[in-house]
Each structure stands twice: as C-alpha cells, then as structure tokens.
Length: 65
Image (tube, rainbow, N blue to C red; front, side):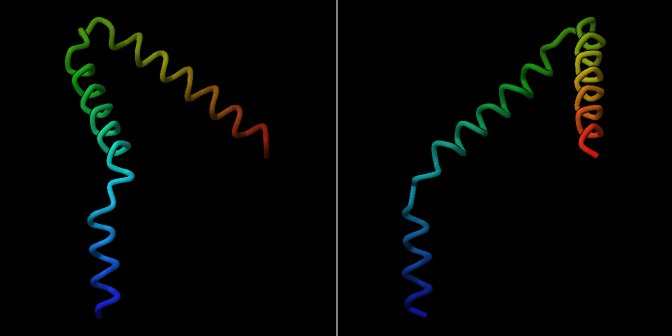
C-alpha cells in the first residue's frame, strides 16, 4: 500500500507534461474562437477545402489496397 501511495505522490508532483497540455488547451480555445469569429460568407470556402482534403485522403488510402 505504501508503494502505491508513493507512486501516486510522484505522479502528482511530476510536471513534465504540463506545458504540452496547456498548449493543447490553448490551441483548442483558439480554434473554437476562430470558428466563432469566421463570417458566414467564408464557410462554404472552408467546407470546400475540407471536402477536397477528404477526397485526397480517401484516394490515397484506397491506393494501398
């Protein structure tokens, strides 16, 4: 039981991945904010880009089989 307690304490004190998590959260916030600020006139163009990317990726995935 003491070994489990020590392991839990060491994980609690370990801050090595904290920066990565903070940057991921900040990136997610920026992405959501940018999506909310986009004018609706740009949305069809953005959807067109994603549709083209999806087509390219599906064609690339099917070439291997």
